[in-house]
Image (cartoon, rainbow, N blue to C red):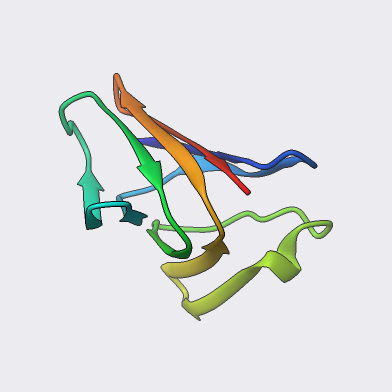
Length: 93
């Protein structure tokens, strides 16, 4: 599935992932490939991304924390997420 993380300043990430865990207002939830369409509001917390490989622009690399070769995290204060047709769009603050 494709993930795109967009902030008011820039597109932080766009690429192929295998899963994403998000801090929803009603609790943390995970999205995997072929997940049903969903729109949700995010609260402050950690977004966990798993992907076969990561290509992060050097301009925004400081926003991400590397857990290991296939896992990265990014902190958000709030935002919105939409999953549709195997594409996840995160609008993050």
